[in-house]
Image (cartoon, rainbow, N blue to C red; front, side):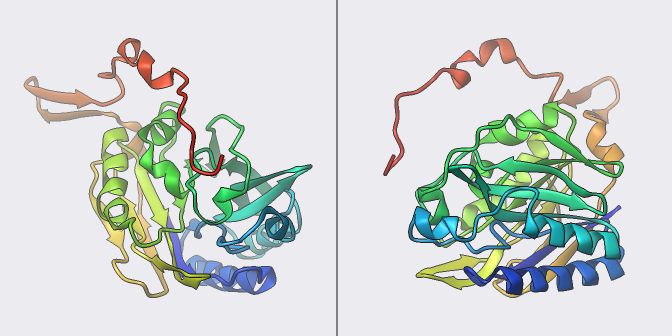
Length: 281
């Protein structure tokens, strides 16, 4: 199976222009044979908003006009897409990732871990458990940007059977180590495919560093964009490799299984509530 990641610039508040650019890249990826195309965090809306009131002007329900347009593009072109947007749900607002296909919305995710940056200063914390969605035969887990800094996020999706974690992201300067090393680590420690797709460009005082990367189940880099240019990355993946967790390196002498070898009975401290507060909350 071929998957794609569209590293691209985004225009804040220019939803129709952003959707036009995303659909153009979806068409290119489909012509190349990609079954799934992943776009950056808040690709439809932009990210560096300065207030909740401003965010609410561009947040939409899921499903809604943004997802309907992307679903229509998948219906016309075939394949599936994962992309970021701002979600409105009554009085609440979320930084969301959505997976759509020819049949409509297949699943969505609300960002659980929020940095003090951009729209994440103002939106609500994600309130749903991690979940795996199906894009045809591929089982996909959704995370967003800062979630990659918390290994529990991708581990929970792995335990649920994810073949691939898709990470739409908006990495600014300071995230170079994440781009260069953390994505490989998340793939390796869970024996899954991991696709991190970043944006480029400049938005309200922030630059974005590119560095999109797709990694394989051994932690190997399958493809990367170590630059700040627009590009579509492609990688061949085999879901069967992500489902075979038991790795025999020397028969009878060296076998590892990073799921079976866990000791969850000793991890209780990881889920104890803490009293720390994030800045501004």
